[in-house]
Length: 80
Image (cartoon, rainbow, N blue to C red; front, side):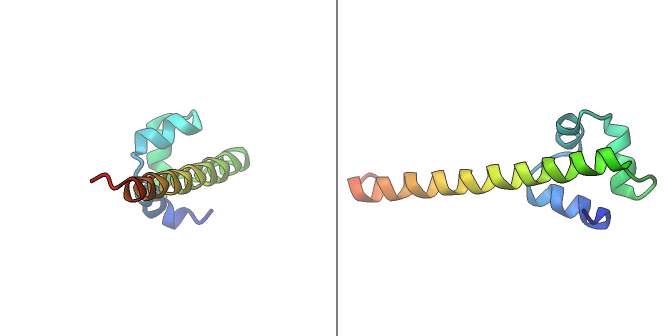
């Protein structure tokens, strides 16, 4: 994970700093220091960060697919 792009990635997922901290089970202060480049996560937290982001990306994709299917279903049924 490129920490320089951490804020950009978080925002693209629609998450707040608090969401990230909660998901990683760390303090928001700790997360903020990573995002600002003041400190770096240790190897365990880097792995947790990679896994958390991957899971969030997967969930975002599944949500897009679900919405697309709902829209398709509405079109087939003729619902506005």
